[in-house]
Image (cartoon, rainbow, N blue to C red; front, side, top):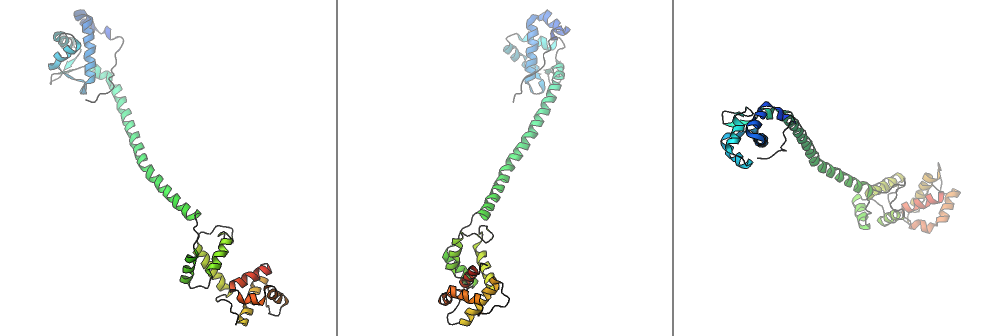
Length: 271
């Protein structure tokens, strides 16, 4: 049997009970002791009952005679014997009821607390792991940028069928430490390439400058000056344009890619 904390009330005026006085008068202090030892035994039992047929075993345990033990149980109306020949104490059960009720409520409350704690404990790691995973993925996505290799840039430009020079693109981005024009760190280098494509289309820059196309070179210069110099109708004979050509050098201009030419004109104009 799983044992509880064996408590039962022992009132300080118990000796004044007339039945116990009779026990003491006839059996002496030994009878008084047998009575309370019997209460202790009953408190240990499930249902607080003990078989009367085994009274001899209790007598041996108490170190007294079976006759005295049986006399205390049956002669003084201190105990009740049921139809199964088990004896019990009505007063003991009555006195224990408030304590047993409190113990029952305490056990139930403890059980509910444990179930709640166990439920939270089981859910928390999953919740925490899920959050940690989300945070980890978020950090990887937002904070970590892996710069592409030249080969990756080349392959992507081929895939996009654009005219961007991969080496120039990479050198330009490395010189800026992959910082965008808004001051933020690049997150998607492919998106930057697509932005370059759009910018070139806006400027009408689709093909590289060719030395044997002077008219095309002039048109590129006029387009750049118009974009960066706020000229409404620039002409190639304009002094500012001829000054730009002179500073860059016609030979150098003919060797430049269109975007390089735009970039240099922009720097000269200060746009």
